[in-house]
Amino acid sequence: MIDRIAALLELAKDKRTPEHEAQAAGRMAEKLMIRHAIDVTVLAARGGQVVEEEIVQARVELPSPYAKEKGFLLAAVARYIQCKTVLDTSNGWRQGAGAWLHGYESDVRRTQMLYASLVAQAMRGLLGQQARIGEDVATFRSSWLLGFTAEVAARLKVAHDEGVAEIEGNGERAALAVADRTSRVLAFVTNLYPETKPVSIRSSGSGRAAGRRAGRTADLGQPRVQEANQKSLT
Image (cartoon, rainbow, N blue to C red):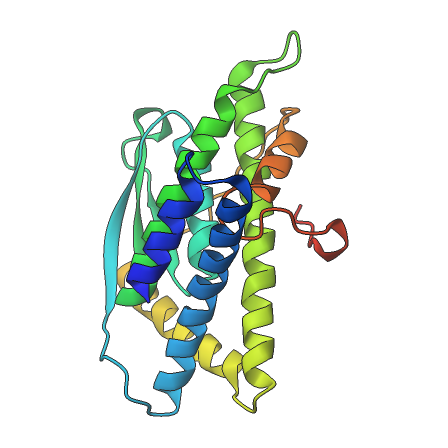
């Protein structure tokens, strides 16, 4: 399944792929990624035959510029694939940063794949953006990336909720199984980092709306979700 998802992601982001095929591949990749994470969780919860996994941690580098914004994108992706992110800012944001990604091994791999593709798309998307006359370019780009992240998170939430609802429609208690798996990861992180604190980010730039539009049409996931089905994040 991991190999299949990776192949779909490559097809979706390949510029040689016709647009309609890229959209279809991206839609399928997102749904498979979210659904596979839920399926594995439910199967393990009822004692099914699954590969025994351990909770692991993996380092993800967040190079400058916009290291903090990249960290928020990583956290948004990780959340809906049942992983937890801890940012390492010991060197300061201006020098770049890093993050520790925690979760069951297959979930961590899925998160790494999806994040790597999305951050590449986001940075490419920034290239053609223009700040308003007189507006600080860095502030504009920061707000654009936050808008992109908000839209990606909304899409992942929809896919996650639909996957849980579909499984529960067949009589499985998917939500409880997912919550239990997530709580185990959280306990692992709390044991490693008992004194973590939340990180917030604000931007007054004008790029947020354009970033959301880019997130809505990114190659991964549902490329053009109907407005009526969008869940706004503020």
